[in-house]
Length: 320
Image 1: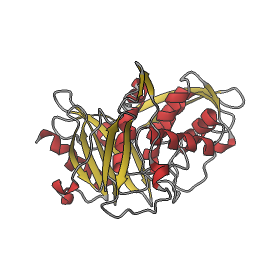
Image 2: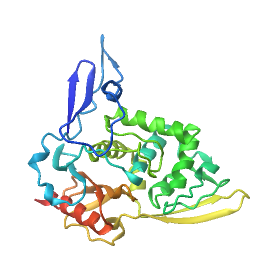
Image 3: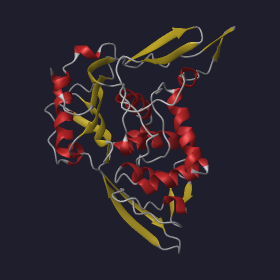
């Protein structure tokens, strides 16, 4: 599948043309999948700033060695050179698991205030087996900033629900905002139904769309700080007014030291994700020794060890 960016007086539209089969059915007709580009006044005419002007575009996946990784999909993008260094099935629709939370944070930062006092509701009670939690409870009062750390580091599904209800009034309304933001940035092969990534057959994305989403999120200094942290201690009030203190830790092995980073590469942020349907996933940003930035994605590895093996294989391309 190829992504084509069309430039014109009205701006840039992103279209997906099928060149391979997808894992998931596509519920959209073409007209619904073309993102709306808002026009900006420019002199006597109206023009939209091309959203593709600073993006990497996959032109030919056959140019890359598909055997380099065992995961279902993977990609590596040179942010500064706007070059695709690796791509395997980057347009295949797959389940994102908790990499969903990148979009949750992006929408929260766009529409919320870090100092907002958020009262946790019953929507944050997640009982699904194996769900990762920040450990917050109904009645707790935290700032939005604290919830972002609870969302990204321990991958708190409860934090995601609390953020959604605070920003949009309900999980469903927040998912609509996530989809609107995805369309705005050209992530046309993505559809969200929740803010945390717990499995739903209608909740999916692609490696390329995750690149677009992460690329957009990394423009925000607060997101970069949160996504680049390995631990955070939050003190907040519970429903009885008592102080609760929790320390949340991240799960990216390259950042926590459980896996050695390839020589010359420094990981500056990322988000993991795992469900039975999604497999093991990781979206990551890294720098080379000269300070050049890259974004790498691995989706649907069959084990945690394989996830980091696959990520190391593609990130090692940077030094070649």
